[in-house]
Image (cartoon, rainbow over all chains, first blue to last red; front, side, top):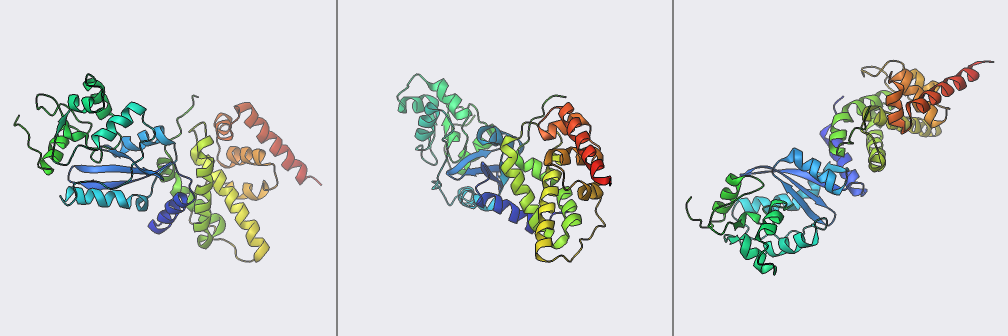
Length: 187
Length: 155
């Protein structure tokens, strides 16, 4: 028997209000595809390019009580919409990256400072966290970045100007850099 | 039978909400089914972190829904005593309705075992997985429940 959208919504909101969920998520339609966006009570904790896999990852990282509660992600969808419309160059939302290792947190913190429309290299980012020879380790941190786009790992490229890699695929990296008007040497 | 990973709650909810709602409409009537539905899945959420095995989550959540409906009936009896729920139009495993009444006074584990065995026709291995015990313990719980019911029937 079909559960009405209204009852469904009320259950989801009651579950979140009762503090019974580990993470709330929603889907966000963007020019680079449908993204899963997820938050804990402390802030945005994940963006995934593959929503199905994102739900599993959330469940493994934060607990099985993962539930879609659109109202809990209004803030994130709004800022992402503005970003993709070209009306936002910095994100104001609070992030929750408490579950990642210390070194990752330091690197991601530094990554957050790379300005809109600019690019940097893995090596330069490594140097900024005081580990100039750790370019490869920085690459690993980028690869496991739980909140791409907001933590702008798309702005990190190879020393030779190549895009190198991206969790969401190089097409998306290219699209984000084009959106931001970041100048790249032609491939 | 190996242990099955417990899925993220969203998938569990999405898969079983329809059958749970249908069962509750039948048990407590459409008007009260919505509250009972919420209560069922909130209870499931509370218990979810402790689940060890993803086998038969449908039977598990229907057991919770059955308990919610029973609580609802008790509450209703206290306040009114009228109003019989609509018992048609929902496909539910046959025998469940009668078993529910019949087993209302059994200890919870025996009741669950009897209902899952004779109402839902699950094998003991699966019932054990639902109850968090061995197949043998599930069989014992069901047969002790049945014995208890027989004693009750005798003069």
